[in-house]
Image (cartoon, rainbow, N blue to C red; front, side):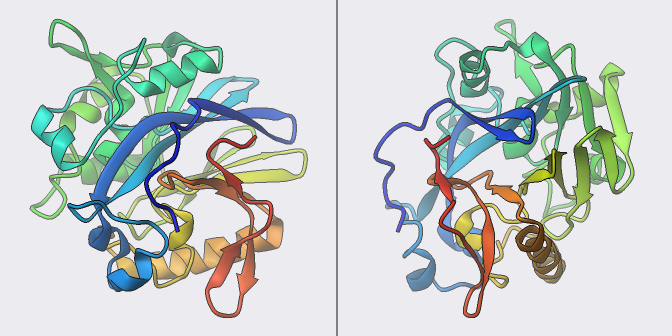
Length: 304
């Protein structure tokens, strides 16, 4: 069971996919309601895996992926950013303040040896505040600017439209300051469906959490890693029916998970869990009871 975290995770952890150097960047921590995170799964079951606090919230990493690609640094997702109010930070238990930069994400980039201006591509799995909040940054004068001014931002065309026209159910997750300045900047690349945005950087539609969610598959030298986003937010969500109540289309999530996890097991992908505060990445194998489980090669937040 994952209880209170024993140590602060490292800001940046290096690993490789073939010849590509990749980094897991720690963009901070949030705490969301455990019941919402596990949907119909009863609390006596899910709390064996991640222990809740006194407000029934569970700790969730804000993990981003950085790829050193020949065509420039690729950053996948950007955490929560620095634009939200104190009330927001309290409700969601956010801890992401930077010691040097605006947030912990910029600090993690620095540990990896880079600055915000070095990032050439930003890919969003989707535009919820905990995945796209760091797309933009609030300056000391209160203005909002692109956090990665030299980057081309990549997102699904229909996800941007979906985010820009929210309803009562979705509006709390889609916050315009996270994506509207990007859309207005001229630095936006919109894609439609499955796309290889750069050689070896493959955008895979993985709907269910939201209709136009995408995961990112990095390939090189016969190896592959998949940044799952909110398709499988933690290793505890590997069983097919363990699906978040936040998912807009849970039966679509169910079908997508089964397809992607079968492929991941068959092709021996490394899976990166964006929100697991303990397990950073893992390969998976079929299991008669749970569907898929992490193999012995699973690595914790501090392992290379």
